[in-house]
Image 1: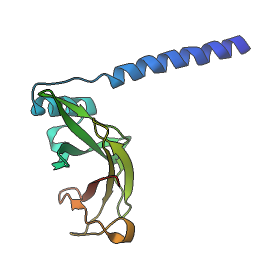
Image 2: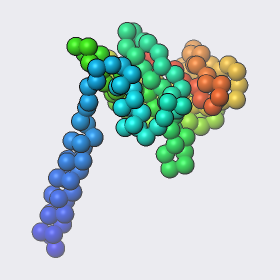
Image 3: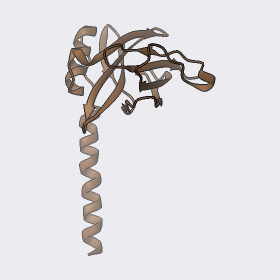
Length: 153
């Protein structure tokens, strides 16, 4: 029985390692648009799920929504550019979008720069979040999803 347990654990480690290698495989593209289209395909979303794209400290980020297990979640990906090649890069979990609850996560861009991503939902036109209500996030009027990305201090 002990040998069977060890074998099962060993087999599980091998299978999860193989699975992880496939997930971490990255594809580079000749254009930013091709990288975004591939990212949408990888995420299982459409162009309509993109909430925003914006530049922060010279890096392009895409904020998007998707549904997982019946829950609305928000993600942020970085479009990196290296040697005139582009890649969709998401380093971090999704945030469950909930009304009047601000969630946040620490994430890194492809080049290792650290950021903090905040998100939630509201039915208000303007809100303040963060320590001492010091942040005014962007609000997507169609969905009520709010978000803010800042450099990690």
